[in-house]
Image 1 (tube, rainbow, N blue to C red):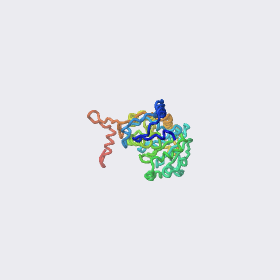
Image 2: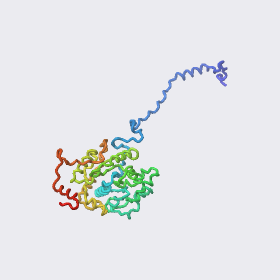
Image 3: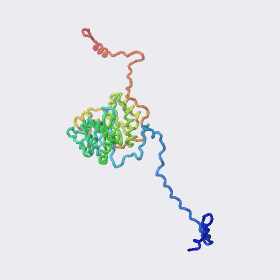
Length: 383
């Protein structure tokens, strides 16, 4: 045992100080220079600045006022085809005609095109020459039963043009999908294994804003809206654009309105010119330069199950859709073009025909007077 272990304890209970040798060692250790502690590793800088606070984004149900540039994270992959929805809630504006003939014109240029008929009426399927008896697996089975879309693809008589057909059974899909989880994304998931094998996928939407149209908008990258050059040209278009913004905000940030197609243009009427001017006023550069004319050959082609490009390639309708296909093939329209913020009119009013000359009514022509007298002539009256 060393002498340090035999030191008596101090009265206050603290151990006795070490002998001189221990004191010297303690002083040497205290006086020895100490190495500074290693600094903590620097915090890596963030990859990007945090997004600025947007009070509108925190409001539930808020809708952006305009459609701006596509966010970098919302861009479609470059190794997949373009998905284009052709939609307008107004019926009879040429949606199916545009979907079929635009697809056929793009196919003639060498692109692989798939036309998906999302309308229960099945007009696009008929226009591509596929009879109802041939439609075994349709969009109804793809959406309601979850069958792979690859099993529903059918060839058409036009090279490079393919179709997923539709029947009236699709009308029941909206009711059957009401209770399904993520029902708005059924078409998006179905096209995941298909879109990489085509250059264009064109969705022919029904004339409504129901679940079938929402599925199409949720799956599409671009939206083309046909507008007829008639009196009620813009009827309901405002509600369609509001739904586009809601889909963009909640389901599909890639979706953009990339083009307006003016259909049923009749250069002989003043009203058609007024509609074109009014639509270009509100949508500017989003309106395609090509005007689809009102044509008897365009109306006849679906009855023969052929696109206009094969039914009558030299007709004005065929040349118009070939020109439209060239515009579409150039790429999407500029996404920086803002959407109109003011309210759009429900109808395009024609310019009034002057019926008054100053304050006096114009005298009717003699022929009109005779017709009026003959129209209201009573039986037994002499002429």
